[in-house]
Length: 438
Image (cartoon, rainbow, N blue to C red; front, side, top):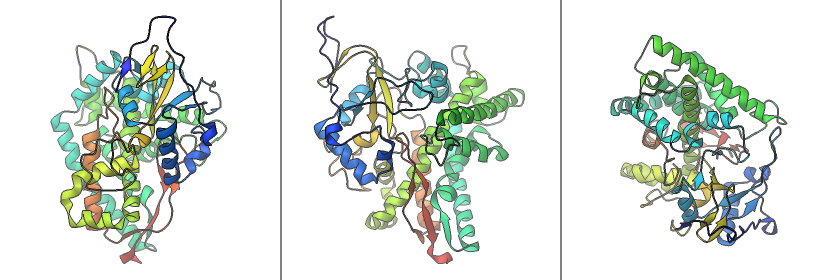
């Protein structure tokens, strides 16, 4: 891989802005993200092979100006090269939005993800200091109890009804939500609001999850305001009455004499809902769907619990819950032979890199024993690798082990309702039943 400095002034080659219209591909078309995964992966296969830096016009979003377009990065080596050079490809211009949004909103909704050094390093040091071994051990230890309680509720619901339930609403969503809310000390009465508002923020404009399809931005802004108000209230309460939770640690921890502001804590909470709640929830729901579609792999894992480590990694690779992150070039240069200019936008398609045949043998095969498995489901090289990857792996490992033990009769009964979003590879619903409860 290579990221080369810009040539002498006046000699920089012009970037190749080859689109993919001639291939019948438009990643900015919302309907593309409603297509079955196999069809989407076939498109990414073509882009990797024929147009690895394909250029697309930005999707139109009400109340946001149209931008210059973006390059779709679909090869693993290119994505790794860009991720490992944060000074050349920055996050501070926007990491979770294709369009440029006001700087204060960008930082608020992106938190650490949408920051560059030195501010990123400062905030991450403060946050990392709060994730003490004692804190993490307590959270990890609580995961099993939370999973057991959620699965028991599923069993009771199925037994008291017709045996059916929704994997997303009843099983996958409550587990990471409870883990994060317990960790932050969010009161029980506020948790339904937290789930509803996080769904809006991550809806990608899906008309089922936003009140006004013609103005999704306002819905996202209002959802963020409500979550911020909750966390600012909790932060103020913890300053007066400290408890043994992450919110208390965040408001009291100092690094080089600096603390997080209440707004920074609120922003970090929104990040947790994205990185810790939504991604784990979709890995659980889509992992269960994948196991239904590959019964041989499910039987293999049940027969050999020693597969858990590699199985969890394969589920993250296979599902790629976050589809992309954006980087913006800070100067002219070249990456792996592709010239670019300052201001160019790059969307790092993790879902495509995770199926790159140059890195993964038989990449479209679901193999729970795949090892090594250098997937980028938690991000690639560089300072933005997922801070909570250890906790996410633990949640997934415990959840699947407990499902095998406590819900061995779980059956998926119909196709999933997929989130109509390019950013989150999510499910809205996944019908299921417990065969023994019929």
